[in-house]
Amino acid sequence: MDSPVAANVFGTLGAVLWSLQLLPQIWKNWRRHDTESLSPLFFLSWAAAGVPLGVYNVVSDYNIALQIQPQILIFLSLITWSQCQYYGKRWGLSKVTLCSLTIMSILGGIEVGLVFALRVARDRGHDWALTLMAVLAAVLLVAGVLRHYVDMLRTKTDGGISLRFAALDASGDVASLLSVVFQETLDVLGLVIYGSEFAVWTVLMILVVYFRLCGRKLEAGDDEEPRGAVGHVERQA
Image (cartoon, rainbow, N blue to C red; front, side, top):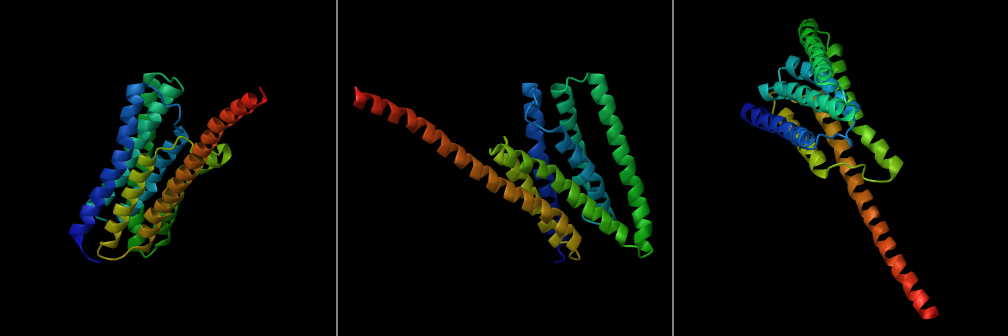
């Protein structure tokens, strides 16, 4: 479907939703001065994922909103990662700032260099490099989420996952998918990137609901057991 207006609207919505999922978390971390339940590796993986995603979206000439979206992801993910180091590992402010700016500069430099290199490769008919960026983006985005699967299956709990957080990310993926659909030409790799992340978040939300229901049943069983024991003692008396 060739609808630049719709592509920009959904692309902007996707960028906003991806921002909304991290901004409340950043605010919450700052207010509580605590990141105990957060994984620094998760946010570092997302920051790294923004590089191939940004390269792919820029070189593929996606709408401006989808080109900016990965940059927002990198920036906010690194801020959250920095908070994990500052509040969780008690790094000093100067160390956190220096490391964050260094990582941001390295990621930014790699992305800019790859954009120029892949444009040349594309113009020469070498599409494999752009395909590689799409695969790397999908793998890194999914890898960050898979850690939650491991934690949930290992502990048989919801892993402290916020359904609101997961729903915002999944909604951003849907909006981004629609933006890709409304591009001038339908890009299958773009659908794979956002579609794979939407799929893992959807399954994750299902698991969260499942483990929460299981937890409530166990709590209900624990509440009923003492009552039964009291009744048994009374009947013996």
